Image 1 (cartoon, rainbow, N blue to C red):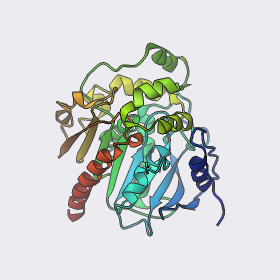
Image 2: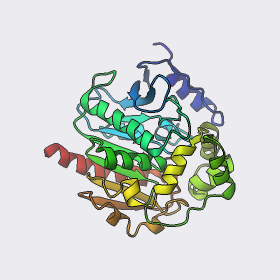
Image 3: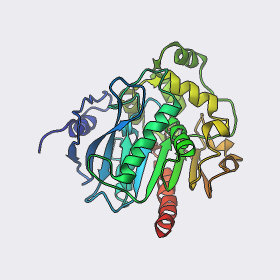
Image 4: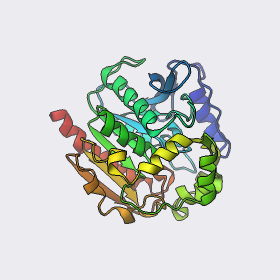
Length: 340
């Protein structure tokens, strides 16, 4: 079998924890087979956006056997990450891949690189706002719902799952564009107003350039709850995930986070699961009271409080609390959607 850049990435990650992985993958659909039998296929989606020659979003489809006929989760990562936030490497005998965990539970999973990150297009950083990013996510979901994708697959049941800035984008997509999903999962983002502990130098840097980077020290302080994270994971994560954040997304997200009408949190009209963690210094479960009431148009809202976990759930030793909660909730909600 030909060596694709995706399979090479998996090999490099297992061998060198503290080095960033090279990506540069050819356009089209690439195939890889992982040791756990999960198949991974690279898909490219044309999407609207301010890119010369048109924007594209790259996603990786994870499945075991035939991908169609199973519910689909479309995963949207947060700032500094790419799609591999959902497919972290196995480290020190522990599996950290949310995508492969869900494949074993009979889901097909599409993890995308958001515009501005990974292999997807990088528009001008001021033009790349939450509105633009959400329109791209909406187009990807519609392509998977209707079969307008390179594999010609269509899915009857779809859940949109976001993390942090990815939750912000996913909420705006469903609330403003009526992205055709049956359920929405928001992790690492709350809407009850509170002061965000962002260092002044970080904010200054975010305002200075169309794209800006978080430092390893800023990521460590914001993303991880040290007692529940393997130090090797922190080192790997800080080295691997160095994608810049667009000034446009940062400004629009920060301006709207605590304004339900602007975020469209009050316009989402599908069942919603919100997960908030006790040691998330950005959007912690201490602010969970009042969260459900803000989703005023959703037919059902469940707020789960996670214990002993920081902002980036998938990196933590306690990650399975989040994963089990999502799997259980989606199993119930999507089964009901299928019956209807």
